[in-house]
Length: 208
Ligand code: URA
Ligand code: URA
Image (cartoon, rainbow, N blue to C red):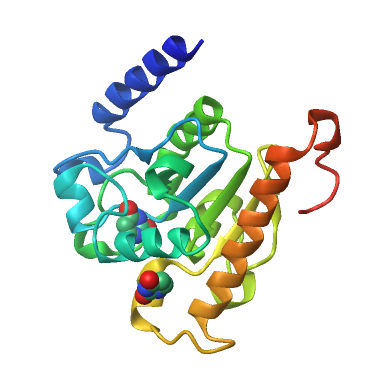
């Protein structure tokens, strides 16, 4: 089983590397598929690769990614062991502009395949663009964050993107970073619950 899913993930990465479904293929250095643990219960989905991600082929490895790692660590989650990390678009938009709806739509079959392969229990959507791309909901992340939403048979939680937290570094109560910490604590609690609950008790009728 494990060998099969490992082979499927490798094939998936090769298929992504050959993708030319949208114009972002022209400017990329690398297709940025994922990092972390494909058997993790938690998936983190960001907007799209930046310069360092494009250069290394790994998502969330620049300054924002390092902050994401520290934020996850603050609730006892080690990013590469306890999460599987990817993006709505897998190629870097020029000048870090927001991916267009067409680019996000062109890349969505890859993300859906990724969810099928990884089968995460919970999904974090890092930023308004990730929320728009995945859920089709437009709005400010200040309003959207912290509200669980169903998607593909699992629960998603929008959070502030780490890039935003870099620009808003205060940890005082009611700041973006404080709210993100609350959100991540809720995720941690839900993950712990999923781990200890018998399978029949894990109904999906109510938001966590
Ligand atoms: N921001 C994102 O949304 N994704 C990355 O991979 C890096 C920064
Ligand atoms: N935010 C930071 O900037 N650093 C940490 O260690 C945790 C959260």
